[in-house]
Image 1: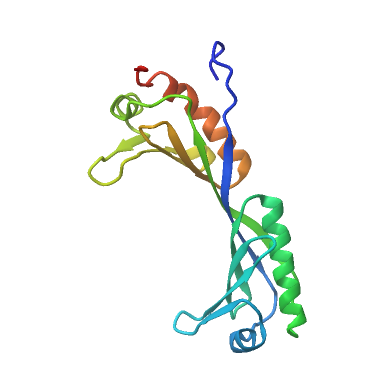
Image 2: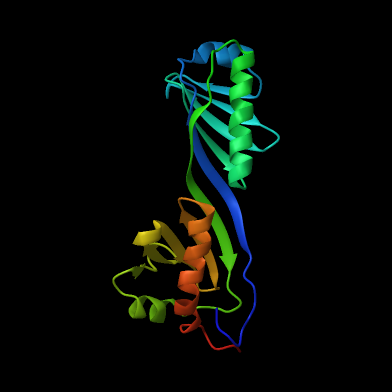
Length: 186
């Protein structure tokens, strides 16, 4: 952050994607018939199950792999995954909760200024790309953090990364680059 501008940026996590395994085969038809809040998709070979607290949607495959989306923190994702495993145990499956992993975190952040995207991409050419005909945002990829930042001209950022820590570090990394390309205030 700039020394004469000590505004704190709010990074709001909007989605956490996590995976885990049940270590047993799952009968999707039985889950669809006996489970609650389920959508059976036989053409894709999966079942969608929704939880209300925490708000999570899970894609369940017969192999026992489950992908959970919709959580707003890593702890909430783990709690939702464990509740999902418990629901499957109550349906009669010998579920053992294992290999839990947070795969992706999506967050949004708003800069206190607007950004001149053409200047930003010219200054950061190999890493940043901006195709206004295809997408209204400039894309900035940070390889060592495995994070991608979408920068909009309004100063809004959409950040994706493997965990919350990397997302916060990506915002800290890109802030000085955006600060030098800010649009003058009217």
